[in-house]
Every structure is written in structure tokens, then in C-alpha cells.
Length: 148
Image (tube, rainbow, N blue to C red; front, side):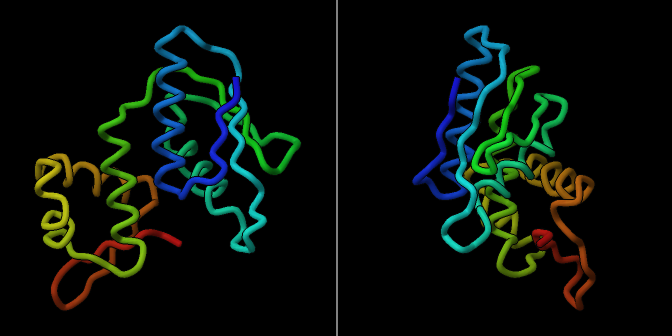
């Protein structure tokens, strides 16, 4: 099975991967999946490749993966379905905190229409614990930023 992420932005690529991965897993597929993400010819070092591998690292309990001999692909072996809601919140929070640090109030304010406060709190706590968000103290309290 092949999942091709070419011609997508990073968010579309991760969402597409989750959808196709879960579709295959729920259909009984347990073999290795070749995920084609490209090697980064845009000059930015493979944005989708980097994002995908960070995502895969944070989901080790759901899958295993190895770097393929072709630098433009990764081999993924499914272990269980990925929790889509949790992953959508994580992706959105990381993207929101990528450019500049945000307070928890700003994060909640940005996502309150889509997610419950306890879901946002749990997501931020998990992302900090996993090392994807850094926490710094500013005069207005703690701020969170996506680790570069």
C-alpha cells in the first residue's frame, strides 16, 4: 500500500495520512505502508517529511516506522488506529504556536468554538511533555511556542 502526500501542505498531508492509515487499519490492513512525502526539493528541507516524522515519533504506540532507502519516503507499520480528534487538536495547536509564543488564554480563545477547554488543556500538557511545545515565563505568565 502507498500513501502519496505530494502536492499537499503540511496540515493537509498529516490529515490525509491519518485518514488513509485509519481506513487501511480498520479494513484489516497490517502490512508495511510506503508513505511518499518527497525529499524536500523546494529548498526548505522537506517540510512534509519533517512534519510526518515528528507526527510518527509522537505516535509510537500506534505504529512503527523506518526511514526508507529512498529519502523521499518512510515505511510505516500499523499497530492500532490513531485517535483522530486528539491529533487534529495537536496539529492545530502546534501550527497556532509556531510563529510566536501564545498564552493559554490565547490558545483557548482561538479554539474554544471547536474544542472543550479540558481537551485544549490536555493537548497542551501532552505536547509540552512530548517536547513539541516549549514553555517560557513572560510578564503575563506562561507562554507556549512550537519547538523549532
